[in-house]
Length: 177
Image (cartoon, rainbow, N blue to C red; front, side, top):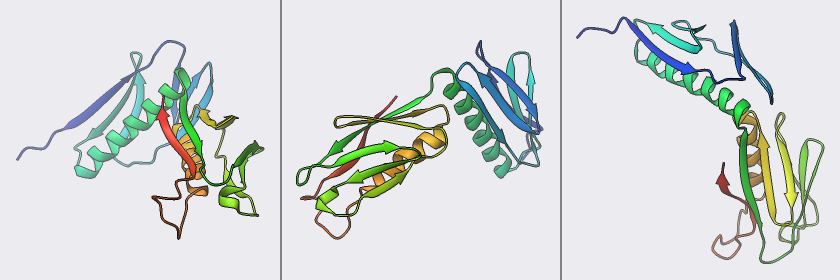
């Protein structure tokens, strides 16, 4: 079985976005700047002819997987700086009305299931949390920060030790944009 000499993936760079590679990949746009360091022995990243080129020489199975992962991360950085990421969530309660407030780098959830002590969820990185009535919007340019903040909100209102068919209170993801 013959092995492929070079495996190559190209990511087009849209207008208004600049990408530089000097050890770390830095993507700049009108919404800000994202930088990330990719460490892989056999995968090289370079910019040529308006594309980001990710390639691996004589790739093994792990190199092919790493190439796809790096391509996806760079693409997410570009999409984050052009469109941004927005997750819409809903505050649901049937038993006790919850009060949800965002302040600083954490979200405070009070009166969850009638508990006396408030629960908190950490806001990761530069993600922004907006609360309007029963709707919670988590937005930002870094997909990982936005996703982790959304997961922190869901985990903070996770119910343990009660019947999930009866107690459906919490903060849940309803859609991603």
